Length: 433
Image (cartoon, rainbow, N blue to C red; front, side, top):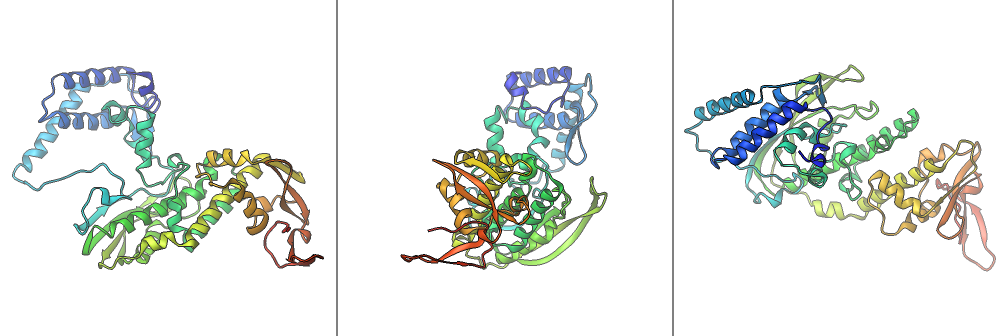
């Protein structure tokens, strides 16, 4: 096996000898393949790999257990083949067609016809730190479905964002919930909790963002779905409460039901499916079935997304994350000035996997003249001071701790003899003309 391909596997997910046997079996199946059965044989091997041949375990995230020095690869594979044959014999007279599409559920119109679906039953990802590509990584790599990092990246891009390892700079599904006050409040609570606990890792900084991307992606999915559903179609979504992000409770089922209702769906029920024990808090979390009905009246989702309010809030959220990243990178305890450069905007956007603004200067302009600095920045100002941003040379700037009263001074009008007044602003910036 090529080293680059082996690097895609989870470390120690399969021991050397079972891996060697598996690769030999794959070669034999490839050389002697019968097109009628080849994919079935591969599927049987994928099942055996995960269940019995590898060192993987699930609980609930995929993990690596004790190493198995050896495994009866052929026997385990044949056992799955026999089970598959038995199952197929039971349905041999059932000629109901089944079609599988490898596609993005947020872009359903690429594979399904409008007004063609009567029912949807699914369990989408939950907003947590579970990387779902890890769950199927072993068999996907060994069967050649993922050949390099580019293939893996392409797979992740087609998934609803639900963990920080699957977020990219250009992701913008959060725009779909930019005017959803409950989702915004939830994201702010997660961010406030992070600041309170002093969590500063790159992943932890993205918890609030991935929460908005998740619910934005699900909103986009439900909106896209309205074009292919027939009037009266029923939907069932199995989802679970989560507290993965610094123990801030996310009531996934209720939030998705609320989102669906705003898009024109009718809520028929949120039924308890089961409870499960939270790893960190030891609390019982609900898994629920959100039951919806589509009456046939489609919401104007395009107008919703294109609204200036949505774009405005989305931009402010991006800018706040970038400016916070820059400040905390350069800030030293007790400092009264914090220098930075325009280039830091580029680096911060890359580190946070945030789409880089077209106009870099607008980030600075926004916090100098329009928008309050993030709370995490304001909280580090010396007593009685507030941060403002001032130029410090070509493409260079600095946060400066200024008397709180002066930080709120704004010009009234432009005249030959300027008049100034103390304005009731919430902005921590000096307005100058």
